[in-house]
Length: 144
Image (cartoon, rainbow, N blue to C red; front, side, top):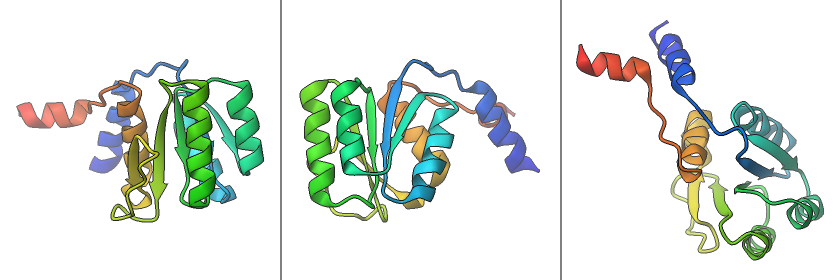
């Protein structure tokens, strides 16, 4: 029960800019939809399941953050990152890897292993977009 309350308190304390635009790209349908759902609760999210679809979205829209899944090839991820930075130099790229010990991806602004889980993904994206996440439950516990 404690975990449920602390998570809900965390969500209540979260104030996000719903105008932040995020593109999630993944060949894995389940990962794509779950990431869209998690991030879509706080940001304006679009998803793409194929390289061509992502390229089209990147050339016709401007995004603040792009989340590239480990299910993409290294070449596809690097090309999408280049397109994003060319179109919007301030756009940030988060590379997801199969584990937190994945190889360094120099084309990415930040990296995150899938082992960080949904909270880790939300936290990393929020931080990259300039938000600081605070949990009221943790703050109350620290002062008690």
